Amino acid sequence: MKLSAPIYRLKRKAKLLSRDEKIPLHAALDRIASKKASPGWSLLAAKRTATAPAGKLFFPVGARRHGSGGSAAGPRQKRW
Image (cartoon, rainbow, N blue to C red; front, side, top):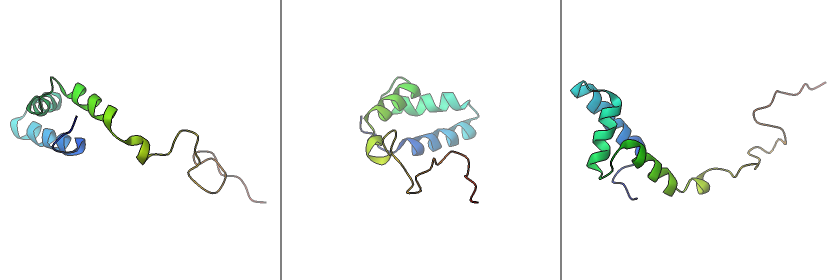
């Protein structure tokens, strides 16, 4: 599905709509989705993430991100 704007921009529009019209955020998200010919926000977001090229943007599972050889999330090792 090709959207006219990225998801983060649509979320921002919904947040502003929610504030302006004093409606809950979920209702504003659904209203934005209905303008994009989708029955609801969750379906719009799910379809968009299913077709997004995230594999090209992020490292594959198990790939090293740093050249240090250690775990990025693990504790620091002492240097004695």
